[in-house]
Length: 481
Image (cartoon, rainbow, N blue to C red):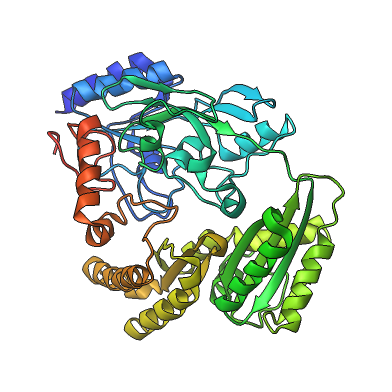
């Protein structure tokens, strides 16, 4: 077995070059452990191809020898979807070297990027031609666009622009047998048969490796206004959202909510982030308006709606950002939630999405049920309230999580509460984070048998040997296992 693995290293190096194959344990560590340090796998090699042709050659080599393939972007995910398991014979494929901008068309409002591009680089490339790529999230300085597409990332601009799925026009994908699917058509309308590219968006690398994409661009926001509201409950946030939509329409770009407990967790653990407001109410809402026209006064219509909201008793206080620095300070709090939670204890996180009308009932019920079942849990919440996606997080003192079996039982109890309440409100357990390792048991529990059967048949069709990212979404199957 050791000799065959050594042969694999030699042959993989012949494809991508010696310096682009990482074989030693210490050097592999950042690639075989997930961002939260929860999953520890192993790999015979971490391979970094420099082109689609090299990706295809590596994949074909692995497929011919029944070596499992684990696609990995920036390894910033929340569900362990990019982490190899602990079986022998995994090959991690990173696309760090594939960061070319293949084409930019201001006329068509498109940009064609290789999948290893950092999200911030995509944003910068769009900005260089006076265009805007709206996907934005806390890890944008390290996550890769291929991973964003593979997980159908959401972020803070979904309310206006939609999730990643809505931003993709075309894809290039290396299939599990090494063939290359070329769906790189930069077309706004294409009704020629099945929309094959959609299979790979949100599939978490289980059906193939995305190597490039054609993405939509937009006119950049040239005017903006931002406010932070202090609220007593989610009901008030929903009413304010309805008023804003009626008054400013599509200028409502972002609507982000955080519980007081969430902000307190950040304040206690992330020293470089300053909380630029007093914590005096249970909930805090960030409202941002944008317009593509320069010089548009958005402060006035925002202030008018929020003044009426205050007079109606919907908000306790409103802070209008008076300059860019103040706006950035408020956004810095929102973008620090993952870091703050990770530092605060053992994180049991959820990615529920429920109908807008049911969000208030969802947060009230789920918090009460978790606290009743696990009194020592610190329940914090944040989310994209305009699209129904509320992240419920239980932060557990690590003293309660020393014994693996007891920890697993505790996590399962909390998950069951959240999942049952999500279902009761007509929602789904994952809005943007995906399934990965973390949520595959939950997926099996809450998803209908027909849905599961169809997904398994798609997986079997494209990856009959179960070699492409095994153990993600479903338990590992195929000839290798």
